[in-house]
Length: 140
Length: 156
Image (cartoon, rainbow over all chains, first blue to last red; front, side):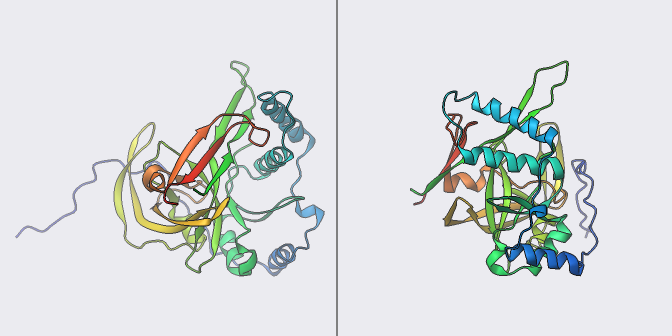
């Protein structure tokens, strides 16, 4: 009786390089303390990302481009705010996987990379867990 | 029928002196996936009407604590410029949209072992369009100047 063998692959393997496994991440105590402070609501101004003048000037140009689609009708403040926060994230973390927290004052990055994010999600309380968003901002 | 709208996002790319100023748009939407511990995980997803399946990186799913199926299989993945073989896992996850939390649905997901966790998950046609009617609308409004998507439940 012939020995069954796997058929040869018909297609070449994926061109994506196999993702390199990140080392197991153990959050240092100061990182855990920062997570706890922020998620307890004690967010310091320096926790929020800011956009430097060159980035802000480009974002204003983008907002003017959008406004030109509806001339004479004021832009909703929420549209401006959401775009500004997205682009601020792009500027600092474009192409990287991050865990973010959005507040009326701005956006805070809590962790970068899937290992650190996993540690963060395991460490935080359930009632704030569903406020932590994971996303890969677009490259600036 | 429960529904919500979600604005398109956009960027202006710095101009190549040889070409015009480029505007790029994305149909991304905030989706929440329920993990093995019952917690909801908000993630940004891209709506891709050119994709047959909803796809997420296996590594990303594991890192978020989602239930990743153990059984693997191979499929041919056809992209715009090539066809390749990929190792995948078929599963379903409790899913909801962040703007429509009252509606939880069972979405089929393809977990791909070969894509890194930085790749944003994609919402493809199967089985999203069994659950929602999705409309792409370019009408500018003060809160959605670049247009919007509208998601309407199909099952009430």
